[in-house]
Length: 342
Image (tube, rainbow, N blue to C red; front, side, top):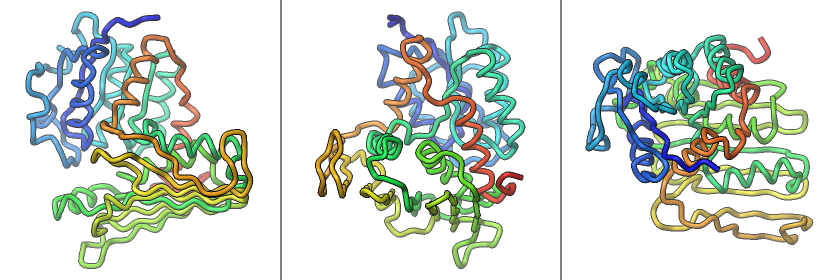
């Protein structure tokens, strides 16, 4: 089993998750050797809402993209550019046959995303989408429970990514995307729902603005994903008072239900979720249970550790081209860019 440190670089500091990812890498020096960071603040033309604070990168070497690609022993790249520059940057990494962790979402062009994602698959190169809930133990428990039938036939699922951060600058930022906040944040939820339930029959987007904000700022969004016996409602708006701490996921089935609120917590308190079962199964008795997933200290660590193990060949990648393509197609439909099954 390989345990050699992985030489990794990061292209971009302008993604909303860029600084968090680099701080997570810094916490794992036994796994990752950060060899360089490409500062894209002056070259990025796409909308961005981050990148002005470079303190998370202290002690690291800033390099050009070409210098990074020609770093001896480079084994992987984190792509953390603005949203609409992610896929082109990943394509450049693909041309250098480098494994990639690419942040979300996969751009506004489905064909461009599909060609990029398929390129990694055809070459057998590790590729990981940065959907942060893939490393969330409570949400991954829900995916497992639905797949195993513990909740029975699913009747409904509700989830939201509401928040109240960013002020007026964030609203202007959202206005740069045709799909608004559903495109920017709803992607995390769509990744989870597709992992649970597969492809929906229909997708209906409702892209609105909060009263008082310009109509072009789609910061009050709903998407409904229709399945044979269930409707899934996904919401995201950016004027929710205290919304960040009240983000939730609720799943109801014929045999039980789960409710998770908040979706994440990093305040030193345990992440917990309520489970109610009509009948028992091989792991839980009938009745109500409070599931305790312990104290989660880092949003990205679990997924990046998995990325390292995939690169080393120690663990398979459970997400492939088909899943990532379906998520991206569903996201663009939920964000109003295209009709479902068009």
